[in-house]
Image (cartoon, rainbow, N blue to C red; front, side, top):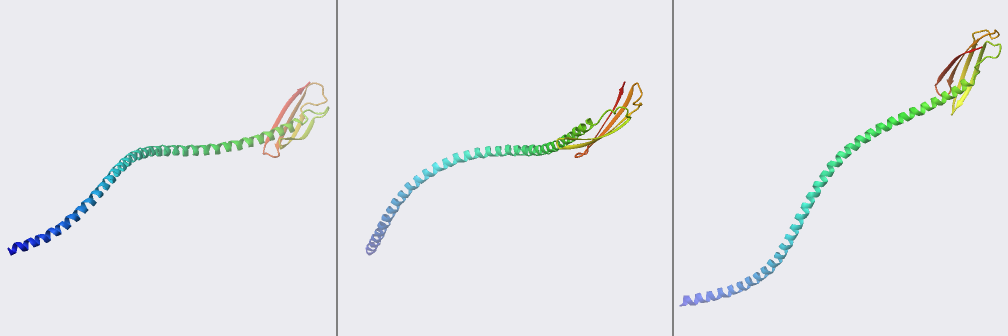
Length: 190
């Protein structure tokens, strides 16, 4: 009996200790219930965020593919533009050379016109009774100057009756441009 009394006393202490532990467990269960409810809300929010991220990832994948295509297209276009720019640069250089040559030819033509003016101002015939003649003339046109020299010779005696054969020649030199010109003529008079 004494053992029963000791056992009852020990059981009473254990029951009291278990009652405290049960009360603590009840509070922990209540706290866990609140935390589980909060976690359920967070899990639902995370699920929505994961869904949104999945949509955004799919959109980004499409955009990345589009950008990759655009980059490839731009690379091709840049290469084509580089080729075209190189060709245009060469064409511009060729055009500049052609324009420079054209201006040089214009200056030469202006010098030739000045030379023609000088040659045309020389006397083509001889004074009556003269057999030889020499002339010098100057011409200018658009800032180009030329000098011309001519010589005239009568093959026949200018005092004799009948046909007269006269030879005339002239040469011109450009002063500003390195140009040269010549003219010659033969006339028969009767």
